[in-house]
Structure formats: C-alpha cells, structure tokens
Length: 185
Ligand SMILES: CC(C)(COP(=O)(O)OP(=O)(O)OC[C@H]1O[C@@H](n2cnc3c(N)ncnc32)[C@H](O)[C@@H]1OP(=O)(O)O)[C@@H](O)C(=O)NCCC(=O)NCCS
Image 1 (tube, rainbow, N blue to C red):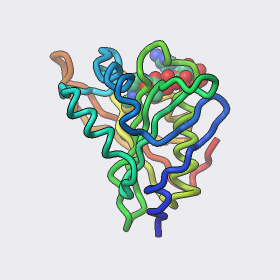
Image 2 (cartoon, rainbow, N blue to C red):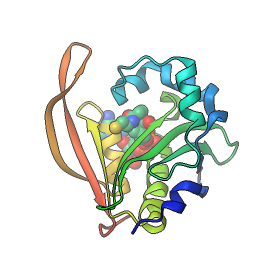
Image 3 (cartoon, helix red, strand yellow):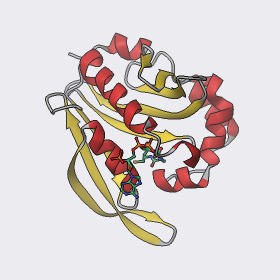
C-alpha cells in the first residue's frame, strides 16, 4: 500500500541547501521564465510551446493531487525558486513512479542542488509514500544529469535508440531507475 494522503498533503522536505515545497500558482513568474530558457528546453527535450494561461492553470492544479507529487525547489538561504521536480505516473498496484527534474537555468547547474533535491525526493518517495521503484529517462547528450542521478542512487537499465528528435538529429534515450531496496547515498 502506498500512502496517498502523503501525496495529497506533500510535506515540506528540508535539506542542507535546498527545501522542497508544494508547487503551486505562486511560482508562475519564475516558472514561466524557466520554461522559455533555451538550455533547459534542450536538456529536457521540450518541444511544446505553452501559453501563460496553460502554465498558470497547470500550476494552480498541483496541490491536493494524490496520484503525483510536484515540488518547487527553493534555495534554503533566500527561498529563491531555483527549479522543480516531480513524481509522476504513480502506479499504486506496482508502487512505482516516474521522476523528472529541471533547475530554472544554467546559473543554477553544477552546484549540487539537483543531486540534493533528487535525494530528498527519493527519501520521501520510499520512506514516506512507500513506493518501491522510481524510474526516469535522460538524453544521451546530458551527462550532467546522468551523473547527478547516479550520485542520488539511480542505476542505468536500458537505452531507447533514436527516441528523441532534436535540432535535426536523432538521439538515444537512457532509462535509469532506483529501487527502495537499493543502496542510497
Ligand atoms: C540535471 C540537473 C537537475 C542536475 O542538477 P545539478 O545541480 O546541475 O547537478 P549537481 O551539481 O548536483 O551534479 C552534477 C554532476 O555532474 C557532473 N558533470 C557536470 N557536467 C558534466 C559532464 N559534461 N560530464 C560528466 N559529468 C558532468 C558534475 O561534476 C557533478 O558531479 P560530481 O559531483 O561528481 O563532480 C540540472 O543540471 C538541470 O536541471 N539541468 C537542466 C534540465 C535537465 O537536464 N533536466 C534533466 C532532464 S533528464
């Protein structure tokens, strides 16, 4: 059994340098900027062009859901919004979920925020929600993300050949996952 109440209420998760807190409409301004940031779009393979209204409505609908968890990543020192991460596609029977993360722009990359936020979310996923498996997809041209995921405990499981078309070329998509029983740093 997974704890759907823990998904619905999404407790704040505090680490050394970042805090994870419920994503909602109050993050629209910074979230909207981040969605337009070219390097983040490339690294997440985002083809879709969103309208401000779509984004506002989507953000407003995040709190209270019990089949996913969407968190904003805020810096602990000043509560600046520096990114988002989520558990999605929660399968209650198999206690599994998908994972995604994006920091808001290159100025936040490479400072340890992503690894720390991922570890915090995995702690919640396994120890609080009761999930057994969390998986993700990452593009072959994103070694920084792959390294951050490995540091947080994800293991490479497979490769989908030429699954992404980006900028006139095919790219492979790597799949990674971590189990509740795997060693966690
Ligand atoms: C992916 C992401 C969440 C990682 O978070 P981060 O805070 O930047 O990563 P960290 O600083 O915690 O760790 C990065 C690690 O990658 C390493 N790294 C950076 N560039 C690298 C490269 N080109 N090759 C190999 N390793 C690299 C760093 O050295 C560090 O590892 P180390 O601690 O062993 O030295 C963040 O970069 C991000 O949001 N990127 C844009 C969106 C994105 O890529 N999302 C994921 C889509 S699957």
